[in-house]
Image 1: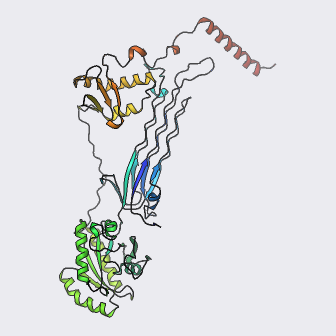
Image 2: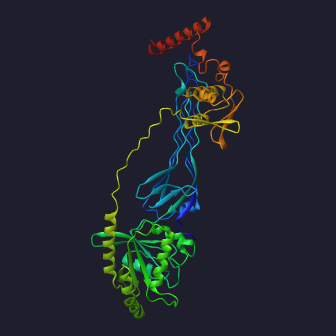
Image 3: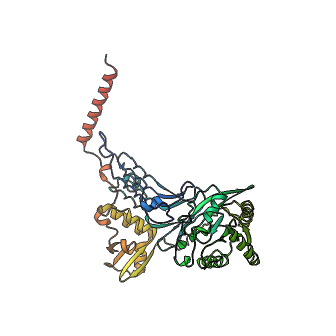
Amino acid sequence: MTTFVDRVELHVAAGNGGHGCASVHREKFKPLGGPDGGNGGRGGDVTLVVDQSVTTLLDYHHSPHRKATNGQPGAGDNRSGKDGQDLILPVPDGTVVMDKDGNVLADMVGHGTTYVAGEGGRGGLGNAALASARRKAPGFALLGEPGKGGDIVLELKTVADVALVGYPSAGKSSLISVLSAAKPKIADYPFTTLVPNLGVVTAGSTVYTIADVPGLIPGASQGRGLGLEFLRHVERCSVLVHVLDTATLESDRDPLTDLDVIEEELAQYGGLGDRPRVVVLNKIDIPDGKELADMIRPDLEARGYRVFEVSAVAHLGLKELSFALAEVVSKARAAKPKEESTRVVIRPKAVDDAGFTITEEDGVYRVRGEKPERWVRQTDFSNDEAVGYLADRLSRLGVEEKLMKAGARAGDAVAIGPEENAVVFDWEPTVMAGAEMLGRRGEDHRLDAPRPAATRRKDREAQRDDSQREYDEFHPF
């Protein structure tokens, strides 16, 4: 059964915004008390959060589809809909978020780091919020916007100070088990380690993490063995430790050749040339291993490597190695540039930026821009008044004027939005947003028109009767 996953494709969907409500306040003696439709609630976000207690992406491997809840629609009596609940997805430290094309969207390092993978849709405004001095009784409300989402790729890159690299069965798992409290699987056959193991080492006042990367073999950077799956876990490590087997039973291998092969694979993978290297000659408790280690040590030192002879089984040379690694890690940490405080970059819009563009594509005039596209998504096209309100907004934004400058004529097709999800209509510039058909949109003359004398007399009589009942209730004698 799979217990470790470091790369998954996740399908996220934020919650949709709730629709606004079109309602008219009604009470006794005041059947048309004005608009009182509430706003729709905001849809929930999908947010990734680094959690130190999470070490694998296994949960998302089994359940790759995640969706936040939708916002609730508004209601009458100025009641706004409830916001959708945000969906929090914990991810391991060192998770890289990418799109399907491999473009990095976020590099999540450090406990508590967050990234909004899907933004919830805005709730639609109710007719109470749309009312104004000129539009006293809107007979429509705005629709909630759909939540954003899509497919993302999560890739885990282990965050550690030291990476142990080497051939399978070189003794990496044994070494990390004696240097730290980690308990990896150890056996006498290749590819025992199928997942990266992490351990914490304390050497004096320095505490650092060490990672046992699964065994590499020739061709690992091109996909052979397990190397390509786990080479990414070496990227964040500050120090590389070559663990060389000085007591290998394979006649066609020797420690120097193993070192050259692993270095070639690291070079093919790329981006690791600046990491300091340390060489560990393991298994010196075996007589042949000790003899071979003494023979090749001068050659390794001549190449500029710091060399340590150890035995994970007999616990030889471990203290010197742990303190030497602490020294190298401390130097690597000191050499890292200090993180600058977050800078806010302000990019003001150009003076002539209209907020939208108009292009002609095969006889269709396409309007693209954040505002026009959002307004289209908010419009209930089954309501003529809502369509007219959209037309007024587009006209005030300058869309009609730019269409005329672009050469559009009456009857030409105009599309608003992306090609796969656009609203297309025939442009009629001489019809001012349907105003002739709808009159003065948003005004209900029933709210202002004087009532007939008979109706007013009945209201007065009803009010007088109510007053008399209240008087009799509080003055029974």
